[in-house]
Image (cartoon, rainbow, N blue to C red; front, side, top):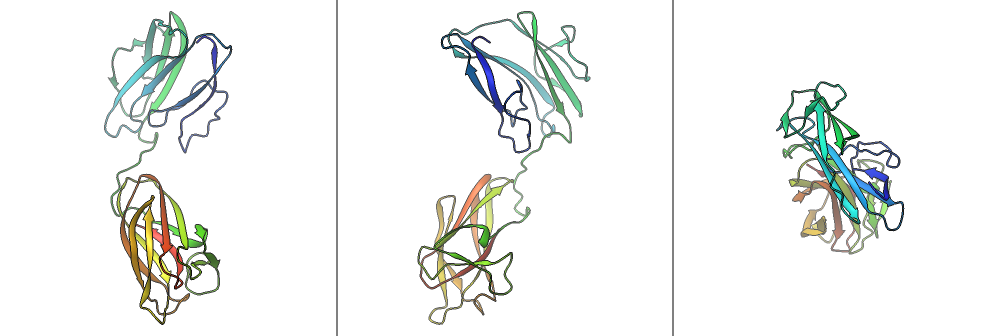
Length: 276
């Protein structure tokens, strides 16, 4: 409304492939949509009419649907038009003769809700949202025995370390040598689709020292040191026999960064990490 136009819309959804530039509407992602507004002159007032149909797509905990409109003032004087909302739940296109929206309402499973937004007597927007068992998606609570998350060391970010492909019994295309250097590191970026909570980190490694029973590493998760001196006992054959060390950690929902760093200069091979 006024001296502005929609430049682009997005929502952060990993499954929404609709183009950002062009459309004047966008499916919300967990109730959120981002709009980029471009002014059409330097001084005029700009107001945005934001309208939406909100509810749980899968109806897991609620079958209530709400329809909301709001005038968002971006510049200049805020307008205050009369806004009426009419809706249908049978798939028909709503008109001013359809049910008038007053409060949140309950719907049956597999329902399409459509809404007509009327501004100062002018039919301005048509909204549509479908609800049902196969609609949307959800991040379920972490059950503790969820699917395994694993990463190969040779695909991680290396610091003062190198990839080796000569050896035996390793996973993937190779493994990483820590170059007999203190402070050498391997870092993984992990996406956790489950809930935040406790997990077990397994480090698959190989080391065989004559002068010591093993070596130590420092483990950092999301910038916080989990263990600054985790002991890794010797394997039976370096580069051919592999051992596993287990460490309890806490992971966040979404992005996680795991870093393994040497605290000695005795050499170490890292094959992979697994989070369970």
